[in-house]
Length: 314
Image 1 (tube, rainbow, N blue to C red):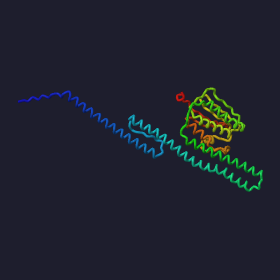
Image 2: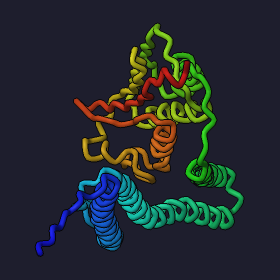
Image 3: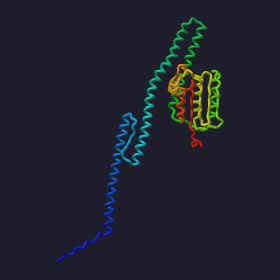
Image 4: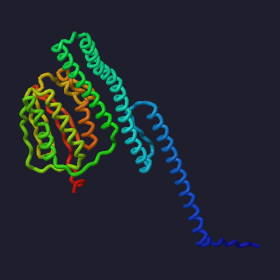
């Protein structure tokens, strides 16, 4: 007897279920591989970030995965690392400047105090010599004023350095510059300085803190009075750049590069505290501007530029 076996084809529903199960397995495998790659990328980011925090290096975080999200995360961390390194360098530089400044300030404070004490001793020993006494008193007053200016400038610098917020409003640079020059007109004429002023007729609008802007102009004008040989050229161009120029044969390119350093003074300006231009730079940069100096043919040029952000103004 021969038995005939007939195989029935699988039902369409069963084939669909098997296909669905196979696809699910493939998806799960892909997800597991993806998760493992993401874990590996996260471990690489963690290890690289830790190493770059502990070691001062310019190498940024790089990962092996091509996943867009993880690479965006690495890029964001790299940006923060760059900022952190810049802040660290500024901190280290500022710490070194502070140590140097303490030494310089100690010397600058000691000099007028020593002179005051010495002339007071002479004044006490004077046998009622009116002429000599008057001369000693005049010297004491001069040294006291120097000491007063130094402490006052230090106080102003500490206030500005600790201030974190500005109060910007719409300012016309043309008018602000003219007002500052007018306020210093008497001081300029007393030093036989007749400034050549060229201000564009174009109305230059910027969103700035008026008080801080006035302080910047005042410090730049004061600096010109200290170092000028009787000349001063002030220009405001159409792009909003302001340039203060004056002959300064006592300077050189090296000294010019240090003018904005805190407590730096040149020999011809020892009455200066060395804070005026540093304050001007701090205020300018805080309001998003730029300030720099160059030296050419024995002429010092100090530039101030506040970029035009029309979209923020209007």
